[in-house]
Amino acid sequence: MHDLQFYLDEFAKDDLMYVFLPIFLLALVIEAAIDRKQSRHLFEKQDTIASLWMTVFVVFVDVLPKFLALIAFYLLHSISPLADIVQRQWWAWLLLFFLDDITYYCMHRANHEVRIFWAGHVSHHSAVKMNFATALRQGVMERVHKYAFWLPLPLLGFDPMMIFLMMSINLFYQFWLHTELIDKLPLWFESVFNTPSHHRVHHASNVRYLDCNHAGVLIIWDKLFGTFSPETEGEPPVYGLTTNITSYHPIHVATHEYSSILADVKRAETTADKLRYILKAPGWSHDGEDRRAKVLRHKAGLGLEHA
Image 1 (cartoon, rainbow, N blue to C red):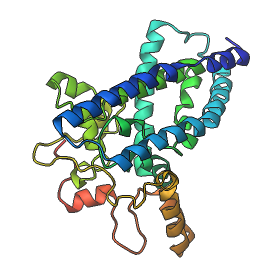
Image 2 (image 1 turned 30 degrees about the vertical axis):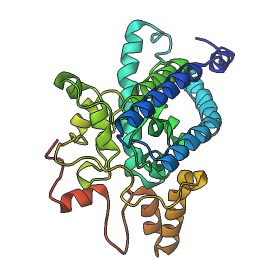
Image 3 (image 1 turned 135 degrees about the vertical axis):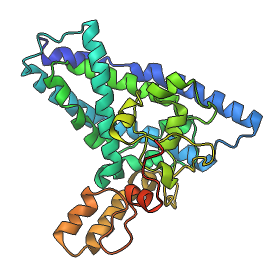
Image 4 (image 1 turned 90 degrees about the vertical axis):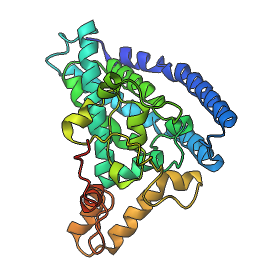
């Protein structure tokens, strides 16, 4: 088992972002060129600028949480009874792929169903266009809590840098999902993997599509746990929030939901209701219409039977 200095050295040499970022930017340029040539109107200037600002914010905000996660992963790995068994064998990487992907599903679903987590994730969904700039528009403040979902993995014997690498691969896969240029893929692929079609549903504000398709790489988790919806020809996705942001100022885009939570907590009359505004899904109200996704879907007679 390696000591902390070994992982600190590996952590310092983690340069995948320098590999990924040029690929992302090149893809964005190509998509924009195709959009201009075909007049698809896939971009909106202020929306794109806001997305790029969120990218910059994430680079800085993520530093401390990721470093603290490294320390936590190391400490948990050091007490794992499986640490000497689970090395960097091929089967360990394969097992980690599935464990990482279901962990991502759980984290992503929680980001939509727990309002304080949603406040950190909402900046990603506030984009009103679906393009590769939106892929770079990551949830800024979700960095504060996201790594906690991966804490069981070092206890299962996976070392810290294995976990970080698999998390990076998962996010790299998700980049290409953020586009309207790719239609539905062959049925066998759509049945197993997350695709642009599935992810367009995830970014839609249509009641039919709300809080569906939380997958990272494998769409099977959504199908297993009842959060899957296909993209239907009769109802194209409408991107953005159910109530869109009123300003593209970067600070507002990154933090506006925290202000809304604070306002709701202040007007709640009981401690229990104050906590519900923090912990229940977005849309819950103690004195008004319940506009949580599952409630709106039920009222519309949709459920998830169409899944």
